Image (cartoon, rainbow, N blue to C red; front, side):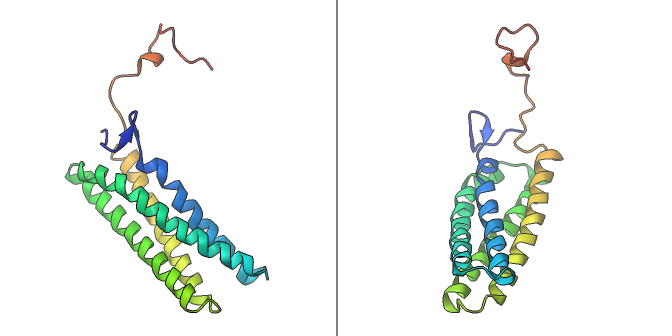
Length: 159
């Protein structure tokens, strides 16, 4: 089932989601290094900015995700709504986290806890995203085999 938010038949949402995921995981890593590794203040600064970048990246990735979700039939749409709700919860947790850090930069306990909860929720959301693709076949083109892969095609890619 193709989704409308795509470029050359490639869905945009899965192209964009690794950006905020990677930034948020790296933010948590930086916090852990700062907290337990005795690292300098730079780890805390990098954690903050990667967190903010993750929020921006997630909101950008949400646009094609919402477009795709609105095109889904009822069954996959239920899973997509749960996926979206968890992702929005994660974004809200990180926005709160940013304000907690700005209000009290010397107390990282609450901020670290918010990051840990958000990353766990991100794992659940990723599982739901995988369910949509691998079980419900969302954004999987089940049409005819592309011409360059058909037997006898001169354009066939060789391994």
